[in-house]
Image (cartoon, rainbow, N blue to C red; front, side, top):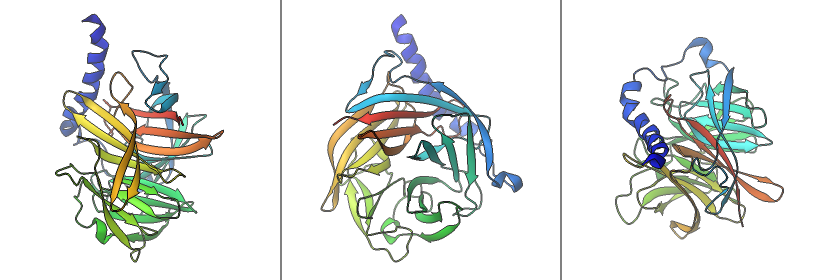
Length: 327
């Protein structure tokens, strides 16, 4: 019984935030005005975390080798809510679901620069009004998917000036709290966007495969289906050079808290088919509301990055975990 106490505490830490959300919703993330719309620096406080709190020497989970992990807090109320993550040249660029881009160095996580998106759907800089959930970066552009509006916007990477936007017909019937949750750019320039929805039948959830820029109103797209692991919903995706697509799937239950499953999939006909289960994140493994997935390369190895969305809730954590994908 004594040995189970730390695990019970962790489980309570995962469950209580969700129970407290209705109470906290009235005062977390109020609208921003005036100077708050300008880029600004935020101080960060970083604590190292292990893969398994019950076994700090553990390094492996499924096909992943744990390299490092951090829990991050900030004095700035706009830091948090990370729903997408891009890592490049030692710099992390995270997208919050309230419409902020957060940039910080991974070798010196003492400060972050927060850049609000001045233009986008919605009239205020909150999750309720913006709900920016997915991010792809390349060729001097950022593509951002807005869940509530089922829209995709393209921005200039350096200035964040909007370049184009679209409300794709292929996503028109997706739910207001389910669309454009996960987005990946595939080799060759196509884009895959996954709906975050509850699986109601054997067909799974909807996905859209775009011939090119999803923020271009004239870009053609066709509808696919993806069947996530039972009880899970897709929350982010990333493409590998060999054509596989990594998909991060999340689940929350009252007694189990947050868990996540990472899978590798391929497009086969009109389906996004799971080929392999790569990792299962559940206590005692360090976990929270994992929503963001990034892929980089180091010394010939594929590196995976996971980040959690703390829902701007002080009872949750912003976690970033670094893994190597083992062959």
